[in-house]
Length: 62
Image (cartoon, rainbow, N blue to C red):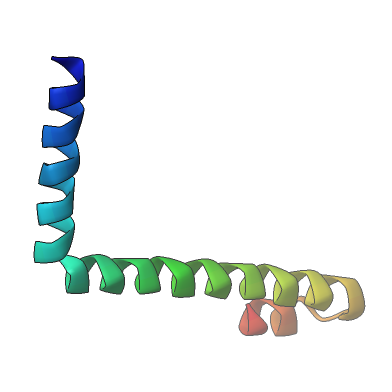
């Protein structure tokens, strides 16, 4: 009984993935680009605060 339930669940997930492949791919790309942008922003803010005296320039760049 438990093995059949797992097979049904896998079948459902496979159908769901094949139906919405393009949407899932778009969401993965958006998540990846947002994460990379956030990390780059953190690095720019760190470098600006470390090497810049002017707080306005730091605020403008970040």
